[in-house]
Image 1 (cartoon, rainbow, N blue to C red):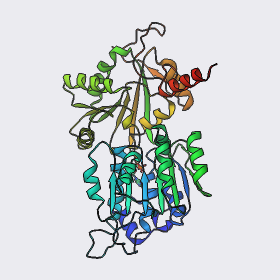
Image 2: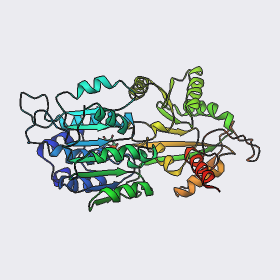
Image 3: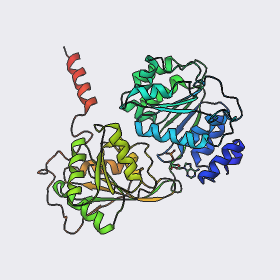
Image 4: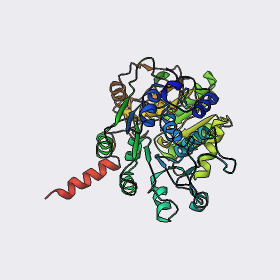
Length: 419
Ligand code: AMP
């Protein structure tokens, strides 16, 4: 299959050619014609499947050849869970849109505006003067801008939810409810989610009209080429093992996942002390710092980024060969998202998980849920000595091992309802 058989305009075909994309990914082949036809789309696709282009192209196609309104009115709204994903998705739209023909008096056929929290709202309000055509936003900041009268949603024709499961996980359901109530009744929905928990299903059932379901199964051919390993190691020896692996394998770019912001700081500092160029990446850093760390990592000015799960979704780092689970993720789904940061767009990658005596049962659970056949390895010089019963806890949040926010809320509700 080629892009030219999907009904795309010559300008967008040129845009794809300039990006070097010649063959659509399965999610693109299925979603693009449906999106162009104005249908609702409910897409389930593994991470790194090319979702962004699958929803961007049908939206941009509508701007190809249609005269820009003055002022520009928001025709498409793209909601994403994180700031980094907003920036990344906005960039993809802009790159593709730069190939659309436009009259000489306009700088571009389509204006794309990206808005997210954690930074001053004023430059974003200035950027919205004169209107805009496409808004890529995190929900909270979008509502702030609506409250400031800087954004109106009454001309939106298409609304995209990217990483819908993550949006709901992060507790944005109330914000989404408010945003949807401000949209015109007649609209197209393009929803994408890596997983379909009941909350996403409910939202989709309530909003989508006769959607085209795009389910791209993970087949051996389409699965990313990730060599998955798990190493049994005592929790206190993990930083040493990490250094050993980085040195002996000469890994040049490594994304390390930990369970807490504190751990991200500590592990990065320990690596720096060992003269490995590393920085932490978590939700408590300023947006400026987060952007800087990602830019340095992408430009190879940083060798290691030690991150919490804030980096596990959507973020696209080309040529990231190694992901390390220093702490195991809380759930099997999170495992998929984390390791999906490597082996993007047809590359191959390695994912290494550190497993201690205390986290072994949790690892077995992830392995079972994902149907993986990974055997626990032992590395010479790092043999695990701890026994499960004596091993200390505290090397990361584990679903079931410690109550999380939702567990605590549930417990409080049960207590409150007791006579
Ligand atoms: P996404 O799932 O949208 O984050 O995309 C994952 C990666 O695949 C990004 O680096 C895209 O630039 C790349 N990509 C998307 N579509 C294609 C394609 N048809 N051919 C090659 N690479 C692609």
